[in-house]
Image 1 (tube, one colour):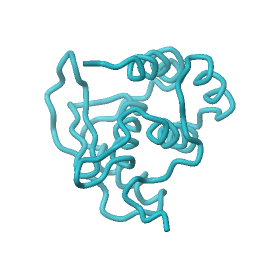
Image 2 (tube, helix red, strand yellow; image 1 turned 135 degrees about the vertical axis):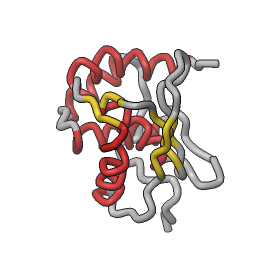
Image 3 (cartoon, helix red, strand yellow; image 1 turned 180 degrees about the vertical axis):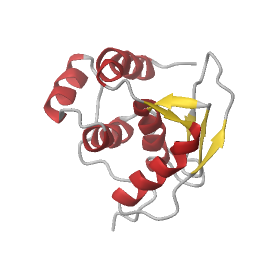
Image 4 (cartoon, helix red, strand yellow; image 1 turned 30 degrees about the horizontal axis):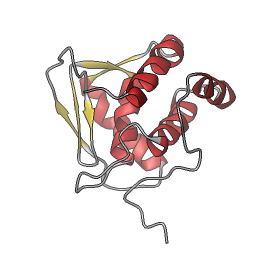
Length: 143
């Protein structure tokens, strides 16, 4: 079941992000991109990319241990799933589409899709999407 929070995020993505990033990543390149993003975050042991048959309900999934994807994905969708991997733990706890997820996702969109942070901030607010600009990976010791 899709929550109101999820619907707001998906609406924002389709209205703002999708039109600005039309690049598509073939499955064969996805692991290299995941590895690159992980390294850019200063992390080791990225999730593995595994094949997934696309369905109407879910195009791809992401967790700390695996990203499941079809034969190709828009790059922003891959970054969405990487953000899930960064905001979940190996035990399966995560932020869903909460503020830490959105903050992580925005950081990835700015860094890897070169989207304008101020524009993303403004449009998130306009669409009522809460986000944490200081979000960090869920599995790191915040000591």
